[in-house]
Length: 417
DNA sequence: GTTGAGCGTT
Image (cartoon, rainbow, N blue to C red; front, side, top):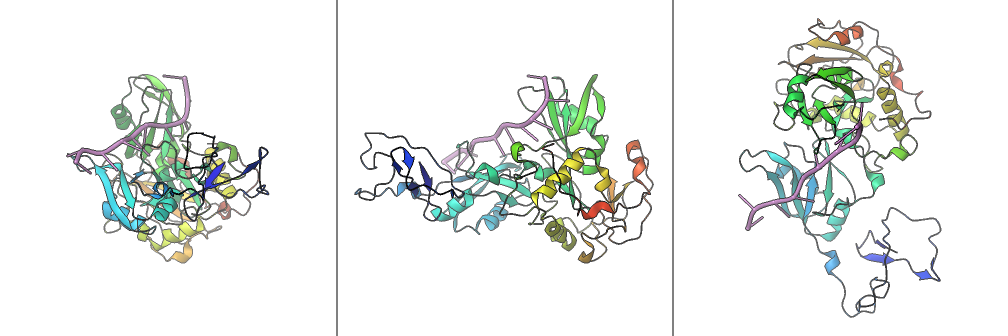
């Protein structure tokens, strides 16, 4: 067996003596990927175990050459400057590319980088990257595997999660549409679901698999539809929570598949991924306030999001059961109030609010502010509800939940989702 | 058939 020396990038071997690893690893395997090596007799430069042979005349330096690295999952809006400024923290960059549609100039959501230093490449390959609010994967091109081990993989649905003001909780804005029929096109789904809120993206796997994903700009819209059956093109589809794509289900709850090196939301970059493929820009934040990343309150919330995995999983489990009880009070209104991603009060409000009804307001569609956050303790009546969203009715006017503190979370969690 | 793909105009 061999593994890469994290310091040098070179392979280190585990010696076998009488078919046992010698010396024994004594329970410490570290975060390395171990590769089984089989003997090949006609390899002169290496030992018969396929490892570097220190006594060989020629050093195998070619293993340490940098190659182009593909960056998958880039936000549509990310530019080469964005990518460069992000990745340069690993080392000198020789090349940065964002691949775009030649005609429209629209990013294809991936790009390439090349480091000058192999150490930088290794480091970069060994982790996942949060760029402008999305988790991005860096790989050797056309190599199926990711450069980093599975246990570092965050649920990809992070990209579809939104902060729930005052509740230390996240909600998915993506829903799973089951029982789709083959004649339902992405356009069909988009136009149907646009009746409920702005649709950022529709995904239909090919070949036909009888399901689809719809991503809304507003997580409340997504959540409100979950559990419902709708008739589209004469067929009854079922709407439910979109489960994370790459969530390690065996570990859910106990170990969590969550990244050890980056706390949940630690980058504080929310809102960066708005505006899906070909859609009208999702307008979070009114005039002048487009970028939530610069919002002190949200950054602070990001910090509050560094929960332990069990808590996060517990929150997810609660959410998946429709556990609205954990959420702070929410008002749903049409049209919003005079624009702004307005955070009207200072950051000291973040994360507190047991009992005093943290409040969140969102608005449907429309110009004007969405995601307005009115920090503080006065319950402000909802803007006139109605407007065809009957299912929201019950939320208005209720007292803020006092259970948002979360101290009581943490018991056994499900692998739900 | 109810839980997702994407790999480079040189």
